[in-house]
Image (cartoon, rainbow, N blue to C red; front, side, top):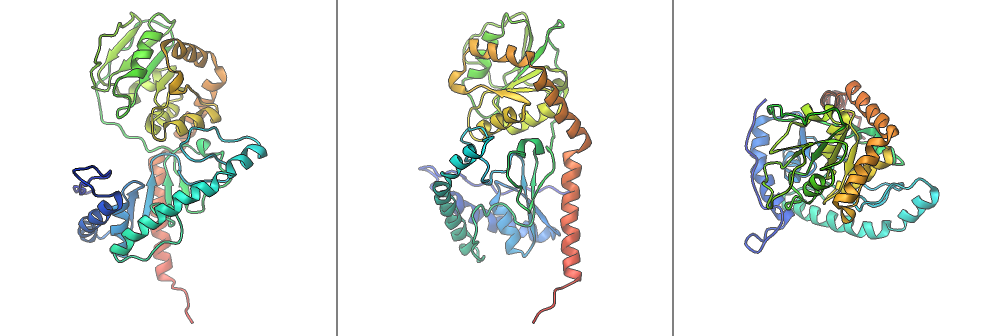
Length: 359
């Protein structure tokens, strides 16, 4: 395994750096291409956000695979628009309602297609006739639980659900709160909620609840003094792989990595979405019966306490989370993704050794 530094560029334009995302991608693709050429791979695996690497692979004439480290964001006739925070419909009437929004979504998809094709033109690549061109039609590895994608009417032929791809930097263990009450792990986002609203509500709402609380600041100090209950341990950082299997409930914002690690540990989640795809993750988990969602507009110490106690009392949710964990043990995501990459390489080699007749 060899590591090399990726080119850095401004993704979102600012007054000081007005470069648009696709202009930046053109620059980064040109800077990445020599690295791809020097390594001479059989196939390139590219994160869904790093379109520059996919463009560089194409310029080198190499096949590329997309890694999707979360739910598949492609639209589906059975689903609401992605990431708006709506539950998947359970009836034909509900599915018909969401189909009414497809013409509006197609406008945005077409704009994205035009912008990507302009970047491709500048790099000497042919235009794409379909939207979402940052996802490979050769293969897309979707690193999530299949249970969270069961609401789809169908999975695209090029997509494969591998299971979560989990990795965590080693970290020393932390001391858990004393006692035998249910353990609640409060695991806020590392990138959202800079004011620690979720953490402060959890510390206040659970201070005298019949639970033990382990909470982390994620190395971002609280800006104001907060009373910490005797049932609570507050730390700067915590190892999820060590603590989630011992927890009875994980309270989080709903980031995909946190959610799937908790479910892989057999622990239900209570999600309070903050931004991005968190609402989608939260509602898919609730739809699958492995957790609960509390809208951020309703977040308060009292409401959070009520939601936590409700979640801890729900045996069906706990059983469902255990089913997720059993699936994860039987289907390691890393091994599944590696097998799929190897399968693609074998298919490409077989295609090259058996060229199709022409004429």
